[in-house]
Length: 294
Image 1 (cartoon, one colour):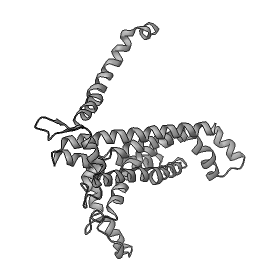
Image 2: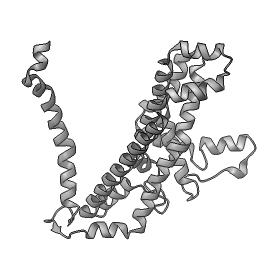
Image 3: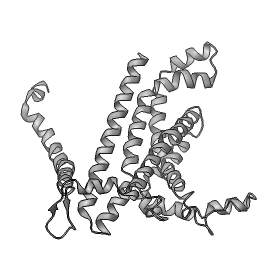
């Protein structure tokens, strides 16, 4: 085994296929987008170099900034609503002693569904006449709360955010549960003997020990929010009036509906740059908080 590890051909055997996949499916598309992002191109004729015109047009495009704002909404909803709710649910399930597998399976089930299925399912939930949500409001005596959820500017984006959170929360709950179960029982037993109540143990012991997992969730939430596409595309298509557009759907429409492939590639580059900036900032803040803590 040691001889195998010291053999450079063994390293090459395992790393070259991975590097080839990385080059083909990440680096080459990135460089291609970078190339066409500086051109005026309709996808058919020869691209014409136009410098930074596409990027200047993007920064002057009010619809692009609406899409950027909606991506920020995705990030904010994940960080300040979804993740705290995930932690609460995981802590509650971790205290359950019966039917634990049932609860874990039930909450993880939406994650295994395709986004198309989830989007169509929740589109029926939000349906103004036959939708489950409006029917429930009618049953509980709140008919004035009935709404055209996906067609109203005030509620369309929130409806999409709730649906996206419903689909992916179970995945994170299972991760957090695994981390909670990995905490040594001796620590909790010692705190319980000292008289610490359950919420004190959760706040001062469990959550600090879950810090690496929480940081991972934050990072995945940021990157996932920046590449949001399918759930918006299935549920609203960016409507009404483009109010639920995100950068990825706006890029798609510019390319495949309007034939502005050069502009769409410029948007793809901006998505990559914005994501890189946010993740770098997040990692920097995480490192700084660790240094302050220790």
